[in-house]
Amino acid sequence: RLTGQQQEINRLMQRKSAVDKENARLKNEFGNLHQKFKDKSQELKDTEECAQKKEEQNRLLIKNLEEENKGLNICCADLLSDLEKLRKQEAQWKKEKSGNDARIE
Image (tube, rainbow, N blue to C red; front, side, top):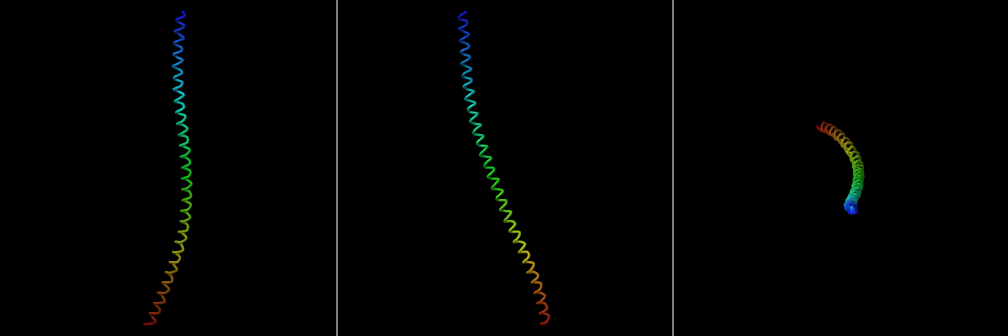
């Protein structure tokens, strides 16, 4: 009977040893997974910060381009106005020249 109990104790000790090893393995695996999670979390945070900076740069670029475009539109409108004035002046000069040519003849 004592030998049977001793064998049972030995089996239980082996089982405890196996469970302890499995626990140690799982703790190690958990630690590795936890570190990977922290690394990925930091990577995500860095990526989000980078994306926010890019968005801000793009907003600023768009704002600057819109301002430049506005200035160019004003410049074009002024040039078109000047062109129209010059065309009217040219027409007036042609009329005067035609009148002068007619008087000369």
